[in-house]
Amino acid sequence: MTDENRKTTDTAGRATIARLAAETLPRLIERLTRSELSELEVREDGWRIRLRKPSAGNGAMATATAKSTGKRAHAASGAPATGSPSERSSGSARGLHTTHSARVESTKGTVTSPAVGYFVSRDGVAVGIPVSRGDLIGHVDVLGMRQEVVAPIAGVVKTLDVEGGQAIEYGQRIARVEPAESNVQ
Amino acid sequence: MFNKVLIANRGEIALRIVRTCRRLGIASVVAYSEADRETQAVHLADEAICVGPPESRRSYLSAPALLSAALVTGCEAIHPGYGFLSEDDTFAEMTRAHGLSFIGPPSEVLERFASKAGTRTLLAKHGLPTIPGSGMLRDDAQALSEAERIGYPVLIKPSAGGGGKGMRMVRSPRELQQAITVCRSEALAAFGDDSLYLEQWLDENRHVEVQVIVDRYGNGVHVGERDCSVQRRHQKIVEEAPSPALDDGRREVLAESAIRAVVAAGYENLGTLEFLLDREGNYYFIEINCRIQVEHPVTEMLSGLDLVAEQIRIAAGEPLGYGQADVVMRGHAIEFRINAEDTEHDFRPQAGVVENYLPPGGPGVRMDSHLYSGYEVPPYYDSLLGKLIVWGPDRAAAIGRARVALDELVIDGIVTNVPLHRALLAHRTFLDGEFTTNLLDRVGSGAFLAASRAA
Image (cartoon, rainbow over all chains, first blue to last red; front, side, top):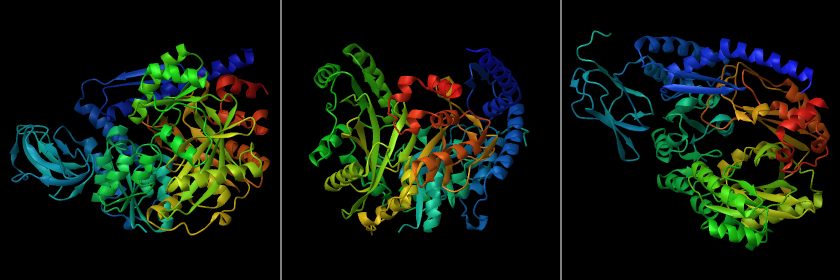
């Protein structure tokens, strides 16, 4: 290796450290917080970064929400012009973003769709009824096969966001269950 | 013609298909995974529907999720793009069983051409020369005896799928025994099928492929060839047409024999026949790709055809409507695959945010890419960021435009393989049109890059 080359390499090394600290690291933290992963490892230019998430707390969730909302706005403005909103149906990208943020903001009581298909609610499920963890809320009909939708926690059904027979996509919010003896808003 | 089509893919090809749908007045629905929510295809499509988590197995490779998505959104057809389920005959059959059209060859055609070993036998019957090779390998003992018969070195190849996965060249029985286990597991992971076969290894060869279009009524045309000899570990990096290795007479013979054979064998829709070309100009059929190819824009630039539109029209049952004499090829085109790979570090795939993206422009310059400033490259899928395609009246003019376009292209925030393309455009062997498929691997990409910096 010539001196010229080495110099270039050293400069590149310092630039890499600066970039890792200033840009990559915060982004990785944000990404890990948003994801369902508990650990993330990234290797770049001979550097290795490993992040491990502490058991998820509400504080971390709130931070993730704020950041990811900001980024979403940025991404949307950076994208080229899209078709006029009036052309879009109810299943449009616009609607999906709302769903996404709802998922991120929500706590453990959110019931999301496990699949793409038609939602069929269980008889008797309504806003205000008490449910136990694992109780059947309904199912998603995927090509005639049932994928069960169950209450993730015990509590009271606070909202029902999807009507029976409605087409839903993966991850779409179906309902929200509020813990029974909780003073969480 | 269809009113509404589900696009079961992602990245640049999803965007490419959305564009053609819009032009044809077909409503498009993009099926996307949770990792691809913020993508151009999702924004540009008439509708978008999330089909699963980032993991491909549960989204882009999940037949029930994709079919259900097509049904609940009221689509009449599914465009599978390339990779994922694009050549899966079971998926094509399921699509039909649910009353939908598969935009590609019908399932029975996919099934007939599913096995590479079987396809070679079939097309050899219809006049295509093939490389000496084995049938499907039952076990290691048979592999060893077949390799002995063919003669080392041999190439181990997976019977399903392509893209260089599960492929190894071996020079001895010892290497064969070591490599075959690796190839089996790679093939199983990539294609869900671990069957392998052997092929004689041609040391100095070029990869030339012929684009064909065949309608349901047996009318077919070829749209010339593409030369994909610039490869790294069996992965194409640069594709161009016409091939610098063929004169017009040989070009004609190759393309004519290809279209004749596939029409006779009952092929339907868009397809690509891949050939190896040796130093003496002999060509050998190796495999057929029953889908739109990554490098299809090269052919579009020369012919003026919209190959995605042709796929859709044929799948909708329309006759081809033109003949070979109507296909006129003009000029020279080169495509550069822009990958999120670190060429300095063994082409390690990169993920992260594209801080700033500015595509190049000007006459004869086309950029097919799903990037935008602020786009986050997810770590779950392949590393293709886009394709720069240049056209010129001749090869020298195309190369000149490529240099300017590559200099103009800005992709900040993520490491790409653009340095490799710059090195290629400075390399005598490429400029002379003498590239062979093994050259990069033999020289070593690192040495190749260093040499171009020194020059």
